[in-house]
Amino acid sequence: MRYFIGLALIFVWLGTAHALTPLPDNSPGFFSGEWAGTGHHGAYCYLNLSADGWGWVLIDGGTGDWLGARMQWRNQQQSLHVEQIIPLVASAQLRVMPLGKFVLSSGFNQSLKLTWNEPSGGCHLQKTPTTARHLLGARKTLESVRPGASK
Image 1 (cartoon, rainbow, N blue to C red):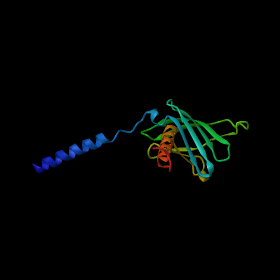
Image 2 (cartoon, rainbow, N blue to C red):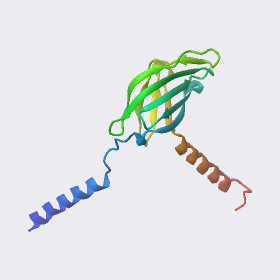
Image 3 (tube, rainbow, N blue to C red):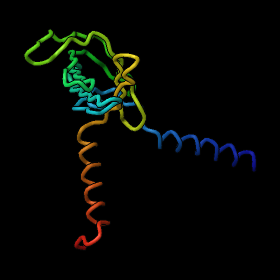
Image 4 (cartoon, rainbow, N blue to C red):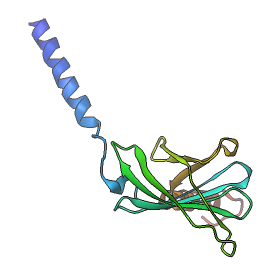
């Protein structure tokens, strides 16, 4: 009888463990939206990913000039894969240079890392609504802990 109860508990545990873990999301909505982040030496990176599988990449390596490209991408089990890179046309007026090569990798807690050359170290990106929510939370906390703040 103990053997049967132990076996039943194992099957119940396996069933509940699977129920607690959501299946990987393959929808384009998982990555679509605006992403922004910073890197070494004042680098700033921006992604705009549309749900149709196309997007834009802009990188300011810290000089005020932009490297840019259009890209085709897909979500494969919560891993972002770049299918095609189309560098932007150079423009001295807009201070834009073509970006022909970059790597996007999925990170922990819905973050991305964008690298475009070895010395840069890349940028760590988060969705802009997430960043805005964290900023508001930090401001509220600071207002609460500041000496002389009204309560």
